[in-house]
Length: 185
Image (tube, rainbow, N blue to C red; front, side, top):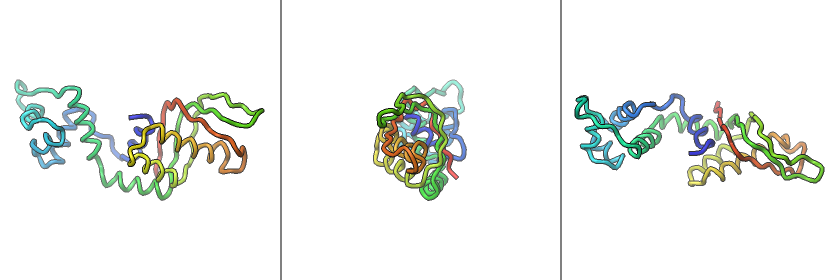
């Protein structure tokens, strides 16, 4: 997951996901009404394996491997705060969001202007249309590069061209994203 994806995910949550694997397993068990069989089916492992992970007996307890830890994390992310996520997404699509980033920006501009890329901190309000475009690209399975292009176009219009009042024809190159955070509402 890239910086933009992680920033979008953080913005859609109001509480952090459980941090330990044990807490994540407890959440999955609660989400599946305590059924180790359903949790096993969701993770692609056997029921007995899940039982070994969650047993209270210290000698019988086993820890999940790295691949299983990743599967557990993805299963928790998919089920964490679904109504809150839907409400915050609708709010972002309706009202827009504030985008905070530290990234390298360069320009393709007419002769006589500076096009040297440099790292900048930028905080900019962006409209709901940008949020709709970002979420549509994510839902369609577009990669991090496509979302970077969407944000570069939006930042170019809003920040560098001041909503079309100056620097006409300026094309923004947005790369080397160090951090990307979104504030909704």
